[in-house]
Amino acid sequence: MKMFATSLKGKRIMTTEGEELGDIDSIVVDTDSGGLQHVLIRPTESVDPKLFKTDSEGRLVLPFSGIKSVKDVVVMELK
Image (cartoon, rainbow, N blue to C red; front, side, top):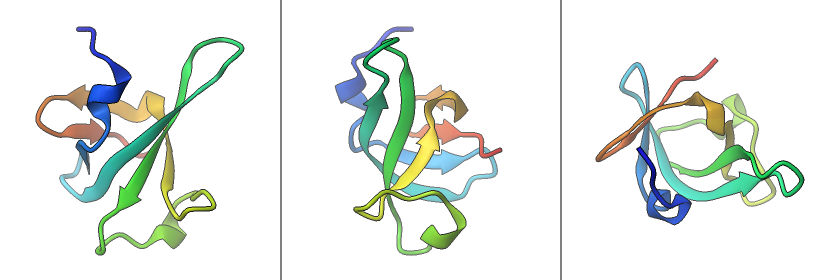
């Protein structure tokens, strides 16, 4: 399945265990390889950002490779 990266913005992210992490704010692309590197997520109030790598804006920085499914919500496997 193909889709535009911009269509992911604003989608809700959940873990494979069913925990809501937040909403996709942006995607980081490696300009040399063109590969999708990270997903930047605005966390929900129930998520402790200290448990994750974050950027200067407080967004969670998760590897794009962790995405397992994209439908109404995005399912992310945390490693």
